Length: 310
Image (cartoon, rainbow, N blue to C red):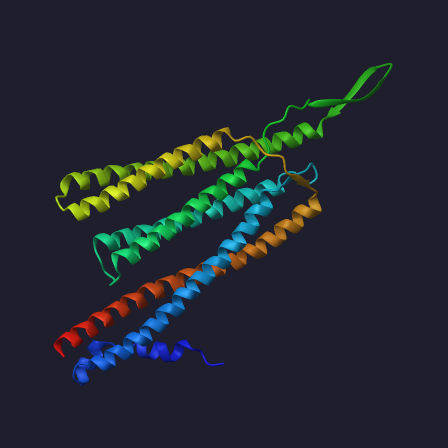
């Protein structure tokens, strides 16, 4: 089957500048044809981005929901806890990456490089905001599924005789000690991430207030105030999430044996590999989509100018 993008890619390489060097300026009819071709490519890329994103979200939902329903047994010790810890770290990395892409679009609003509309940029920023919030909630959900401290005797009686009662180390006590250590480590790591997010948002809030005080443009002022309201709301949400993380007791979950934990880890590693490839593909298509959308608007502008001249 032929690749439907090949003819589109060929036309996408043809720019007004290249024609200007060898031929008269393109006619309105030519530009209209190019607009249709670029629109088709933009629509195709948009659909591919949405499909890849939906596949990523479905897989992450399955992973997080599965991990939050299980916990370690004496047999598996801390294998499930380590899976939750590693998954939380990976989710944290995606938050940082989404935030970088969001910041790039915020810069685009201030200093445009691509020919995108303000509405298009704000819509994509809102999509990144939604993904960041979902990742934070997933990280917190993993933490809440970690078991809390339980009271167990360090030793338990095994019987006795004329020499007195005999004792042995209580495996329940040792398992709880291992799990409590893991729970505390994961909680501390999440709180550290939330503190960093609060500090960053607080800096952003102060900068916005300075910009608002310095502007006399009512349209710009409204946009800045809207962003400030959103930023201050995120600060409040992060503080609530921090408190929730510190106070959340472990929830009761199904304890798995060693064999189940090993099978779960194997399946998780396969899923992580698939997710990594999809994540790379998502942002390859996303970057291409932004560039193609910008080229579409440039061609539309050229068409509009040609129609005015005609």
